[in-house]
Length: 453
Image (cartoon, rainbow, N blue to C red):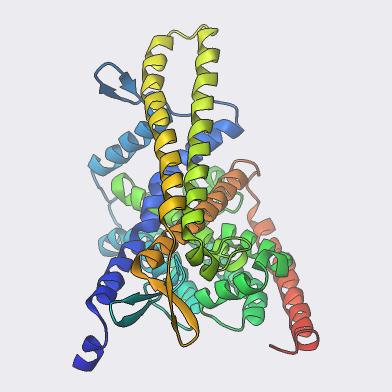
């Protein structure tokens, strides 16, 4: 053990420990997804959404943050409400069930690489730190094994509640999990066959060197996406909750923070699945037409482009504010003055952000010119360049993840709920056969055209 400890530098151990913060990224996505879904549903249904809760600031008055304060209030309400259990339930399993999906949300991201392996020089040492918390050669299998355990939370909740509605919801959850996990595995096998590895970082590296998985396996991508939406139990596949038939499904008897944990578990799994789809089919942390080495060698220009995009988004936000201001001036709204004072705060923040970002872009171009050292023919940069590259790649992955989170929301508020027999038919007779045929065709092409490599 002492040899192992002494073979690593303190900076390497520090980075390894710091990576465990990534376990909380899906939890942070919950704070983003709830307001995103509410505002997205309001946008799709042509309505405002929740926007009346606020906090008060001197001069600027009521600050609603476009409805985000409402979500904080709802979370606090769930947190302070009384936790109860109906008579006759199995109290141990009833209390344990909501914790299982949320626990899986914390464990599942352990094999996801949020950036490429950090290779850098530190003093006289060469340091290499993987981008995932657990760098496993069977990472995708470990991730699927952990995520499949979340179904136990719904099953235990339905059984322990001693309610027929909850029990029927648990049965449907079991059937959905069995049906669509088979589809998930088969649709994924095509890209695994091409990449030749179960390691997620290896799959991303293959896409970086060749082409994104969406281009190489378009059929597999759509099968995987549909199966993922079904696995999370989101509409139109939310037959386990089935409001018209089952009241609320497996969590009918739950309230307060126990219901909140089911709720957060669902959104956490949306975040994890969105990250996974981005990694397997859209290059993960890789930037189009640039390898990790290109990002490191041109880090100053990449950071400048990143700051430029941020300044552009800030200008877009300001444009939206001024457009809303003009519209409110001509409207008959009774709270125009309150809105104008609130918008004044946002405009100040926006006009501060634009010059700051532009200044950072100019400084990046002028002063960030990384130098490298050749180690066994490989260009190795310093710690600052490695961390800067990891930061850029992390942001790229998060942008792709947010896009797919929006896809989840878009699908939910666009399509009506499927009937239970239709869901089973789609899984066993449609997606399963398409995924199996795609795997056979991919195997033939890989053997004949690519020579089996």
